[in-house]
Length: 333
Image (tube, rainbow, N blue to C red; front, side, top):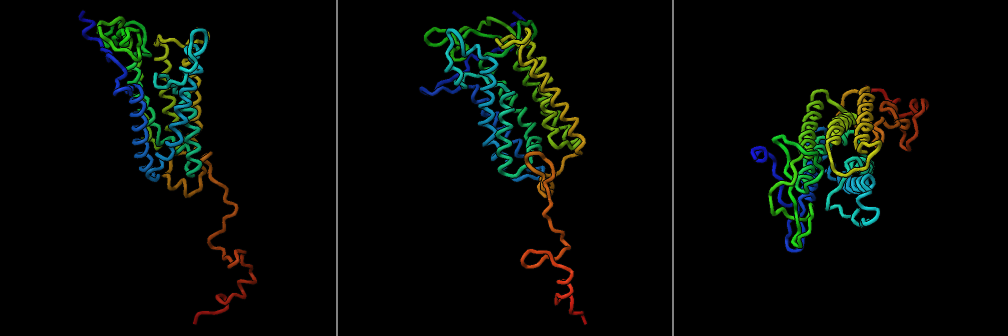
């Protein structure tokens, strides 16, 4: 009994109704996370020399792409939930019931951000560095949605911070963990709150990359790479604790493999990008013509030296023209 008093209670529901309109905690957490990511990213972008409002412009592209990518990854890797005997394929479209894969969200979200940056002439690595802390903080907020949905938890535990899982039922008496309500708050299970472990880990990663960025003036996409490496390091061991249904490869959850692969990729990029030195002010990057696609200085073959005279028609002035010029022939008295 004492152990139960020390555990973490779950919410009795994850959905409230405003008339016929369902208000879902999961959706509210996702929206709140997006707002925090944009707000924090905007502050960092402006502090680095960017123009206010540009992060919002990029988010218009990145957010829809990210949501689609996140859902696609979830449906592909957890296809057994939607396809097969007795399954409803249309449920794959019900994003409000949970199920967003961060790998797909970041991958396709990056494509959207690249499109937005290209249209605005913004270096993508610089924008990614500005957004990184806000993105991982948004992931932490999003994990609260899993708490309300009573999902993505670990195995049984007797630890004092174990999470109580309740039986939820609808008004018709049908058991439904997402849309139901817990009438009896006697836990049917006490489990590891892996959502909480990841939430706290993500906040730690956010503080880590902000500290590292200030101390070492990371640039050229290295803040984003550090975020990816930090997140995947935590996701690796947290994923091993989860007990929800998942696609397995060699008896191991697919996201364990993905975490390891992405981690080594991020570390490799971080090391390689180090050779490019500290970050520069966004104004300086634009002044040197750094391209949004690659971050490399643009070609300047057509530039004309400032000390070279140019004729009115745009052609170079010859030596003969210089001699015949009235400005050259008139001597000051």
